[in-house]
Image 1 (cartoon, rainbow, N blue to C red):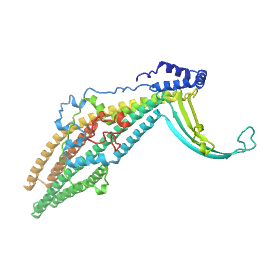
Image 2 (cartoon, rainbow, N blue to C red):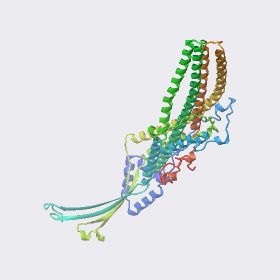
Image 3 (cartoon, rainbow, N blue to C red):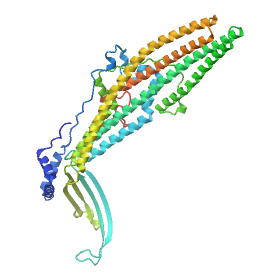
Length: 532
């Protein structure tokens, strides 16, 4: 952090004299209260000129552990294909070229309730900025009053004793506290950073919801593919039951052969039925993510055909600018740093300028005449002489909160790099596993075909065929499982890389104070929001 901002020398000397000792403070306050009107006016003018002074440390982003390269892309010999159309954009899910997925992802941004809650939180944070900014300006209040009262006749030396009088009063008050030490400006600085952090949280939640939907969608399509595989297998097993029954009728096979064939068929049918539970649950989850009741939502069966996309990871240092959760953690540091300035300002005296004016009369006919006018003008200065360490404790707490936010920021960065490495490793290993599994499937199918021929020729028992059938089906199901895991890792990598987002899409200070959109949403709340 940079040192405390320096205020003009004259006013800094004034502040030092005001807080040095109780005697010095009393003398200072007394001199202000005894000042002539011209002196008071000069003090007010000086306060206006010095309004930009702010105490507390200026924010400088702390360093974060950043590797030069990703380990999983160096020294592994793995060179993932990166066609030009896989470069991340706002609508990152389009790289999978699935129209049904595209439509569902668009629904997440429009109807997901978690996203809507995050957007409402952003609007609340932005409203807080307006609340703090209002403290830069005077507060003007007004009042009107009418009363009728009779005073006691036994009051001596009072001209109105025993009389009944009316009182008509209307007045206006204006008070203004110049931001001499930056308490308000630091509060606004922190509130703006908090609003930007909230806007980044919107993007983080949106990305999380969209990635979860894509993962569930590909998992569901993988189940559809597995169901298709089991349907084909069940048909083959029905043919096998019919074959063994015919062989039994011909005196070639035994009852045991038929029973084994029927057992294999029924077991596979049970597996096929069980997949319906998983598919229904995934379908319900997708409905909720897209903001729809599960009872009104359904997806037609369509086996998985998408291939995993390895999003370009880029240079690790760019990840700090591409992850909304990192941006949020960084903006939170700005907020907590500004609170140190707010706590520091509490050590200095406050100056309050007030003006009161109005009309007052006991006769309604004279109420609005010039002689009924009254007014008052005067500055008030106040400060704390002794609080037994309360302000020091508040400043120490603000510093500790800042240190905590720095640690959380660095941990968020480390987690982000870990997620990228995890999913790069998963994609690399799963690609190799998929190749080996495809070879295992081909070998199991060749073995099954050979054993089927040998069984038909009476060379082996049906038990050998059952073993080959089980092996072939197990390998085919495992191949589908690997395909599902590869799609999940692909989506997770895109999420880990920020989904095409970057910090330039955070709302600027001007956009926070004066929203550009009528719907009051963050500037980058949609997939195609303009940058900047």
